[in-house]
Figure (tube, rainbow over the protein chains, first blue to last red):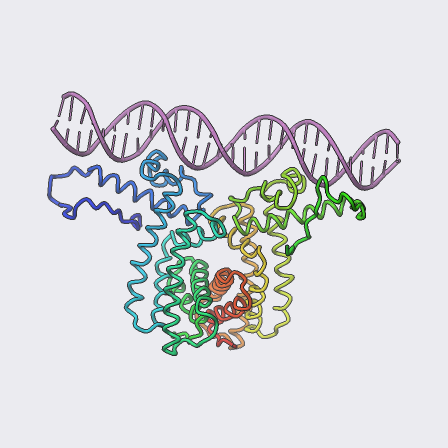
Length: 220
Length: 220
DNA sequence: CAGCATACATACGTGTGTGTATCTAAATAA
DNA sequence: TTATTTAGATACACACACGTATGTATGCTG
């Protein structure tokens, strides 16, 4: 439960199990472990409290360190938040997009995306994007821009699938593609957050909600 | 320029230099006008920035006053936020629930609720509830409790309609009622916020999303 | 081992926002 | 008119969290 975040130590590939004995505390390893713990703590904090209400002292304490360690690993609060965004971005596409791409049928891909999103958001950092997007909307803050960038990526991806579905005739025509994509993502996030990770209803009802938006029959 | 609340008072030191036409307002009227302007400004601010990021100086300045006036009208920041919540609660049910109650058919009532919610949320204070609910979730703050109370009211109302629809056979059985109500509200809020008040798609797609959640055919 | 760099903790300075106390002007009441 | 209450502005005191500067211990390298 503690290690949603995998550190990217990148200190060679041959992590020897029987190499130079114990010496568990090599510097790079230690640093990466600390950084990972701080990142995870920060992600939880951002999800719970947002950016402005996030207190770095609590972030550090929850990770088992002090603010000194945090400011050693990250330039400042903004840098920390950006690192969380980057981590989220990578992890999300790793865990969600992979399954989506295996679906040749656009509608199936969109429903898979919805289910994958719901499953992904069962962890306690699910609300990081929505919290930050709400908090920074309408402002010109680096963190806000980064979150918005992630959001746009998701949007265009959905828009492409919607277009494909319409060309295939499996999604009925109607509102503009981007509008539909906005509603798709909105309904998805709203449903998933409201259900707060309670399986398996989150997955099912998220799929139902987006199916309603798309205008396709609910498969189950 | 669209004041949903009481329109702001244009006061100032050197105003109306050539036209003493409007006589001095009575104290009660003047006070109420000020309070309304501050409430509206605070609601906009809460919707945009949330509670923690809301700066009372900006609230006062946007309303055309100083913090002194604000602290004269409201006890403190928390009191101001609670007043906004109360205003929102009243206005919401006045503008939304009235139409819902005229629908005898549960499904029609739920869809009307969705549409009414979308229309209501076209104003710039639409995100007050979701912002505060996110910010205070998991904490024990008076404002959080108040917002949660409003949310619960909406939830139980939806739950009753869902039960009625199931008894009438117009809503298929499935997940527990409360779970469905959660998803209903979540999908509704998510869709509406994502579309950011762009009529008429917000209304239409909100109805589609909740129809998907409920498992009823989309009427349009 | 010396010395040096790294990881992290402690201590400090500063900005910013809240809340309160004081002060002025205007409205009501006598 | 004067006296009293009220609306609102200005000034002050305090807390809190950020960022930085400094201190200390532990790993690394010759």
